[in-house]
Length: 260
Length: 304
Image (tube, rainbow over all chains, first blue to last red; front, side, top):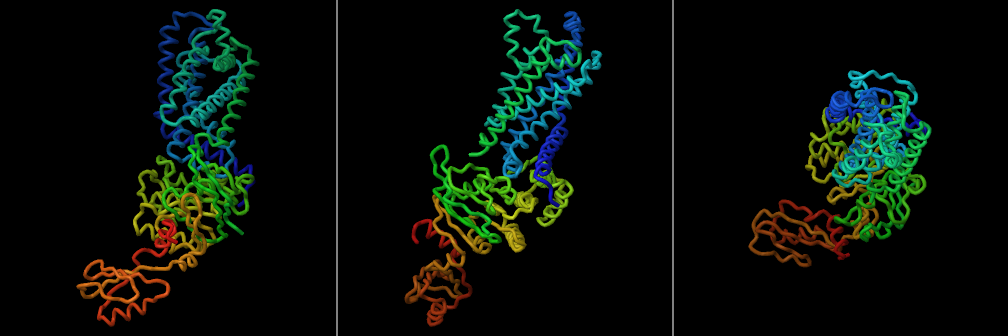
């Protein structure tokens, strides 16, 4: 049985994605349950207890305003975490060599891991969305924008996780970026507030944060309100994808952190 | 056709260590070859370059005429690698490891499952197919890596110390398996510390030391270069002193054991004649060390 080169590569890609999905489901206690618990607490504490005293934001109740932000935050964190832990684990356990010795082109290896990250991000996103429905009513105004933005954002952070894993030499290196960069950027990226609440100078500074564009574009998809223009949000996201994918591919082609 | 040809292959690591100093090495299609050398000689580096796990500094590598600089994917498709260290996911099921590897080579899932069954059965791992890989014994882990390397049915199988640390029974069953697949047409290159393994299995041998190939050729021809062999003789009756055996270098190990060095110009019949004249009865005889080992030590130590 002879299959075309493209079909062979697609089978390779599909194998990585399936292996990632099996891994996510096998360790569901570590991958799917923690975000469900932490997001439920966010909804209860920030949305319910504090949010009821905040009043309206962007023309919606604080709980309704918060929900898209929390869903996007969960997607971002989990797509990043999936790829960084899985690829670093493969490097650490040396089973990344299974891929490196195979004829699967590097682009498909990156795409496979990214798709794995997107799958986990979306699974967690669905779980958090279901949880949010216990607290607020979500009427999706622009379904296409909602779905496309959440997938593209998951791609961006899966690529980020991949690059982090390539450079990581020890387990500590896997947590540095999420702790010191990703979490602050997410918290300051408009998940919990509209940037119009900030002084003008901080509004400008906030615009340098890519997560702001993703959160707002997603919120626009669900609620129809956003602090930034939807066109610039797509442009920024696509630019990041292009840049990060090219960089990931360059690292893999050079064998940075993988080949001596 | 050459299954593998290395030309002037050089590898210098970032710390300045020159692991390979321009090696030339060829393996014909269908051959069973060994790459021998002491630790740090450059064997694993050479294999790493051939299989794309190590970046070369300069030189050319061709696998079935596919240059790894220009046709890397085609070259990789021809190779199956059994590395020295365990490098599969220790938390995955055994069958999944082999099926996934087939997937990375673009083999459709149904065919991958058929081949997984075939090779796990051949390597006596089929009963363990649903076990998690970390629960396997050392010998089983080696066999799993062989099954994984064969699942895409490569034309060239490279084994880096495949029998290191496995018991003699497993080692011999592995040798039998490797001989069988070589007869079926797979070209095999192995590195090993067990020189008995290389002498028993390989038609060609290359000896590498300090990043250079210091000798290569047919095993038979290389062994012919060995000028002296040392035999250990076990005697029926204890001896009080070393018997005079004219022309032979004799060492008494203990009361009933002698070591006799026999060079190329002498023969063993003459030795036995001298022993008989002195009423010394020999109950058994063996080589002190494997012949290839003797040659290897002489070459590596520069004794020629």
